[in-house]
Length: 311
Image (cartoon, rainbow, N blue to C red; front, side, top):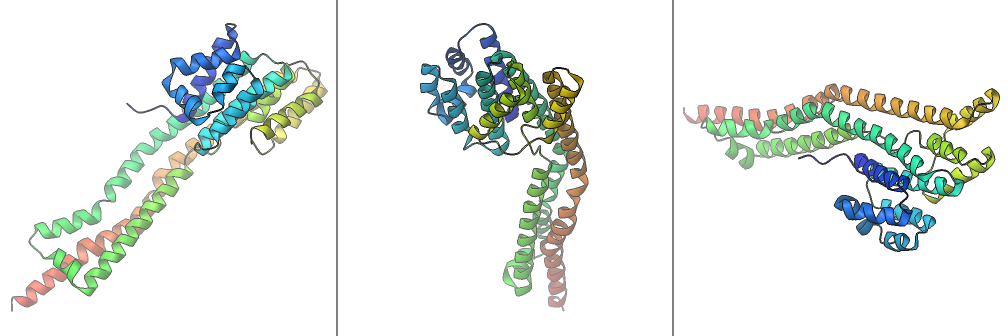
């Protein structure tokens, strides 16, 4: 059974925490229950963040944030960014006095959207990647086919200068094709684990009832503490619209965050759809010449040598 995307695991942890907190479970106990009921989560919390145990016992929100951030340091980029986003959401909610449970529930929802992007990309890439793997075996198939026909393709390939040149050339071409394929597949993956995060954090901060200036300071401090860089110019635009219209900013900010996630999802799906065509480039420019080098050239040389030797 295929394991769920990393972002789905983060979303599951976050949603369970939100449910427990909503039911009145203290934050420290909520972390303990999550670790107890989900071995995968326990692995994240207990093994990747040694400081979490002390944070759970002490019930110190700031220490929990630092522990989550520490755990994310050694994780893959997308996974680490998702955990740092959770830490930032926890930090903003506790510092701004916003409802922690609803804040975490909103963040879990955004993570689930992005996890679905990972699933969509994996489905779109399944066919092209499988085709590339099969075609990669063509050089070896050509070599074995020549030997099965009774020609001394192995002797030509390993025992003559031209054969050795063909062998080295084929190995280099296949290596380039493998590297090229990996780069293409990596380029089609989601590039950002937390699109719309700045809008979500600002929505949480203003939900605490403080001023816009205090909300900005809270979000900036949380982002710096969790190691999240970059700014979102749309936050300023949404806050300006809220001020002009005289309406609460939280819903406008959440709407903007949703729009940014939809754009990220569409972009990832578009890259995955185009990958089916781009994967043909390394196959045509590298794998097929490699097939000719070890499957065709030694076979032709063996046929010629056998024909000359028969006279």
